[in-house]
Amino acid sequence: MEKSRFLSKNQIVSVTLLAGLLSSCTYLTQSGRSSGDHAFIHYWPQSEGSGLRLAVKDLIDMKGYVTSAGSEYIAKTNPPAKRDAQCLAIARERNVRFVGKTNLTEFAVTVSGENSYFGTPVNRWDGKNKAIPGGSSSGSAVAVSTGRADVAIGTDTGGSIRVPAACCGIFGLKTTYGLVSTKGVFPISAKHLDTVGPMAADIPNLVKGMDLLQRGFASR
Image (cartoon, rainbow, N blue to C red; front, side, top):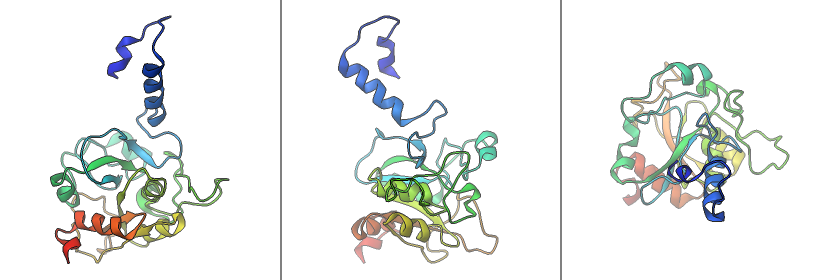
């Protein structure tokens, strides 16, 4: 961190500088994972870009980052993706703000949203942390419901967008198979059931999210 060069042992620093350093520390742990409610595996709250704040499920390739699929083993052994998944092409063109890669159930295989390695994203509607966030796109739903993303891109094979959207009180759309490219998305189903779709807190943003996945969708 650039500001850290001003710090040394026993040095007195300004309140503003110290507050900035501490706030940065709360966003990411030393491992690069989001602290707090476990919605994000990678969180970039100060990312550059304009327009929508977009979160991406960590089942979808982003250049330069390992696509963990919610798995400790894959997170530690797989190389970073060499290119973005094809479904992110329009978002890149429009210079949206990518705010992070979101947590999920390991290998996206359950609808509970729980993850023993990265931590289970906390459903904001349950103050006692007993309600599941739903899965497998659990982190995506929590990121949207807590206001840290305007839109999240999730995946749905057997309910992985619809279930967490319902559990977290937001909107989610399972697209028709083949409507949005799954090239660069970690495969779950061998029977061509995997789909990519948007999640948002309201219908207008859901439409904007879908417009990032299918060119011209919002103008229909």
